[in-house]
Every structure is written in C-alpha cells, then in structure tokens.
Length: 319
Ligand SMILES: [Zn+2]
Image 1 (cartoon, rainbow, N blue to C red):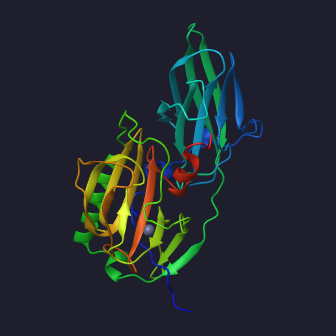
Image 2: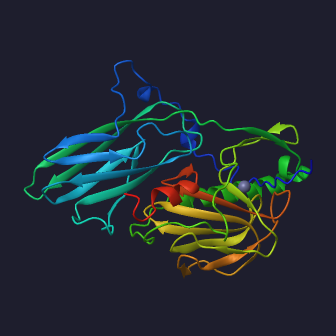
Image 3: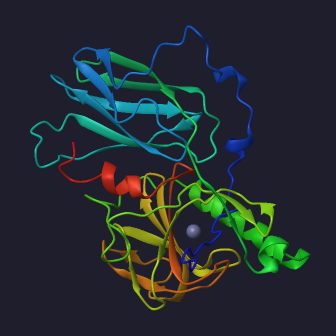
C-alpha cells in the first residue's frame, strides 16, 4: 500500500518545562474528591467544567454562572497559571452573568489531579470561592515510525543552535497573554472541505530515534492550497523556522494561539490583524516534512492542545 501519511515535526522542541516537572504536591490522594462537572460555589453561583477528567492535550471550557447577582473580579488559577476569563452573551442566553475560560492540558502534562481555584465577588461584595479538581488522564496516542532527512533527526551544531533559538522565541510568544479577546464566535478549519483530522499527540520514532510527540494536526493537501485563519487574531510570527518551515502564528488573545506550518508562501506579515477566513498563505512542504501538508497547532496558556477541540468547544450555540 502506498504510504500517504505526511508528517512534520513542528514544535518538536517546544516541550514546556512544566511537562518534565515533578509535582509531588499534586499527587493523587485516596481521599481526593471525585472530579465533578458542576460545582456549587454558593450564593447561586455554579462552576461548570466541560470535562472534569480530560486527557493530555485536551481543552476544557470553564463557565462560572451566577443565577441572581452580577459577579465581578473573577480570578482563577490552575496548574500554577492564571486563567483569563471573558464574558460574552451567546444568542441563546439572556443573562450576561456567565464568565468563560479555556484551560489547556498540555500534551505531556503528568496525569494526576490538579486543583483549580476560582474566586469572585458578587455585587453585594460577597466573596465567592470555588475550588475544584481536574483529574488529568493519560492520552491514548499511537506511535509511528517515519523516515525523514537525516539533518532533521541529527542536526549539526549550527542547525541545533538555530532550532534552540527558535524554540526560545516561540516559548516567549506563547507565554505572552494578550489581555483582549480578539476572537469572536466559532473557530473554523484552516482548509476548506475538512471535517476532521488525526495524528495529534502521536509519539514519533524518527529514523529509529524517539522524537517528541506530535503537537498538532496534519492535513495533507496539494501544495498551493490556501490556508485560512481559524479565527480573528494578530499575526505574531510569519517566517521560516528550522523544523516547522514557513510558519504563521496567530495570537487570538487571552493566551490562545494557533500555529500554521510548512507553508509554500505567506500572505501575511507580523502585526497584521486578520479576520476569520483570511488567507494566511499556501500549503507547502517546507521544514521537516515527508510531503506537502498543513500542520495546525493550538497553544492555550502555554499548553499544547488539540486544535480540533477549539472548533468543538467554542462552537456558537454549543452552550
Ligand atoms: Zn505536524
């Protein structure tokens, strides 16, 4: 059978420090309460989790809903990171008293229980404290063996230095939380005609050597196919990178980024504010690839997550 799989190794080196960190203080205790999808925070406020026990690489949507009073000063932390909340009125909602936030579970985050803490104030200045637990489960990812050009598996010192410098730059980009929410509404596939995609999280054996897991979804497509912005965002990077080839990164605000790799050519430049569906460039085969395809990734609060979950979780009318 002809092998049609095309792969890349975009962001292979971007393993956040968090993934290797030992976290004994968060280890599962037998007495730990079972994670719940809905928590009663008191004062007619409830916290809703789209998945109380997500797998590695998934995204969670949090909603803090207040039935009676306006809630302000909402703050949240998870996995030692601040969670940015936003408010938007969905078409089927009457009350603006819903705050939402995305929590990204990194692809390699150690599977165990992580406490989530949310605080807020009611209009009558009552404190709300809403603790919860998120039980991260191990992701079930396939392993594949692939052959790529040797210089991508064993780069020379110069190539290594370049890849490392790029890794640091990308880390700095993803650690930046733009306080404004630039996206509005549903996220869309970056190519036309797609309804799904696979190979997120796959563990890789490249030329016989264990590589990092695949941090995005690959969509095979002919070179020259237009690539579209999944949502509104600002271009923060549009340039050739060692592993991911010609790469575009969009900052959607609130710590959410989407990444598009291996372009043949660019249609945007850093600083551009692009709307949903804007053409970012054309599918190509630059960087570490075995053929033309688009690599699409999503990073939420520095966690590498499955971008397809942006489409399902933030679909307008889904909540
Ligand atoms: Zn890829």
